[in-house]
Every structure is written in C-alpha cells, then in structure tokens.
Image 1 (tube, rainbow, N blue to C red):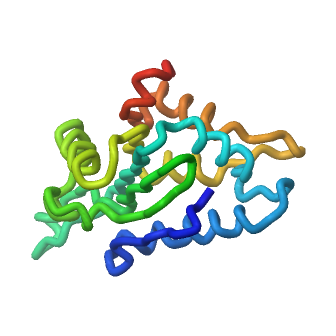
Image 2 (cartoon, helix red, strand yellow):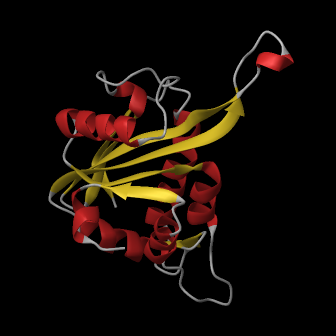
Amino acid sequence: MLAEEFVVLGADSPLWNAVQPLLNAALKLEQQNEGYSWHGWKKADLTTFLQSLPAHCSLLAGVWEVGESQALDEQDAQEREILIVGCVCEVLDGEVRSVRTFNTLPGLPSLEQLEPGILHALEIMSEVRAQVAPVAWALFTDKKAWNEWLYTKRDGGVATDKGDLLAGQAMQGRCVLMGSQAARHHI
C-alpha cells in the first residue's frame, strides 16, 4: 500500500492532526495479517483499489465542519464552515508515494478561506493536478459523513464495502465525488 520511499509534506499544518492518525492506521493495516481490519478497512481491499487506479494519480479529501466564527459579541457570531481535513495522496504504480496537506499547495487560498463548494473544489483539483498528479478521486464532504464512512464497520464478520457506503452517501447528497475515475464510475 505504502511505497518504500514515502514522503510526508505539511506535517507542520493544523490539518496534519487529522491526517496523522489515518496514516498510522494505514501503517498498522500494512503490517498486520490479511484478517486484520481497521473499522471495516482491509489491506486486500485497499491494495485492490490502489492497483485499479491510473499508474500516476492523486487522491484527495476535503472535509469541513460547521463552527462559529470569532466575533466581538454574541450578536455578531455566525456559523462558518472550517476545513478540518485537507489532504492529497500521490499514488504511483498502486502504492501511496506521498501524503501532503492542502497548505503545501502554493496556488490555493489560505485554509481559512477555502470553502466547500464547486469553485474551491475545482481550484483544489486544478492545483493538485499541476503540483502532484491528475486527480483520480476527490472527496468533498462534512465531518459527520466522513466519520460515518471512515469508521462504519459491519457486525457479524460481514465485510464492509467502503465503496458502497461512499456511493450511498453521494446518492443522498451527503458528499461530492469528483475526478477522472468518478467520471467513469456511475454512482
């Protein structure tokens, strides 16, 4: 799953706090036997997915949470969406070669200015394509849908199909999937 020479960019970013536990989980999955599962994620499923991708591509995730903006008094306080996960994985020949946070992409607005919406989604994807590799899959969602997808596992030993879970969320309008592979896969 992970390349022997693996690079992390943006570990000094506040976005890294959400990415690091996922990288740790991937490392644990890679080191365990085939029967091991992390919240329904299995090494064989991830390996199959990565090998199905174009030889050189990227995967990206943008996750926002609703929070209150800083205001001088309570009357001026308003809700705003805050980017809590912004990461890009570079995949080369079926292995994740690098992981970087959005703030390592020089052409993007500041993390505080990035908003969930088509304009910033296209801007992020364009910058990733220019700086990293063409985008095979891009996931844009909120924290609740992200956590459900990431941590849901089926009970009773039944395998969890994370692709089906994500497709279901997309059909319900709970997330947006974009990229070259999304165009070929009808959800």
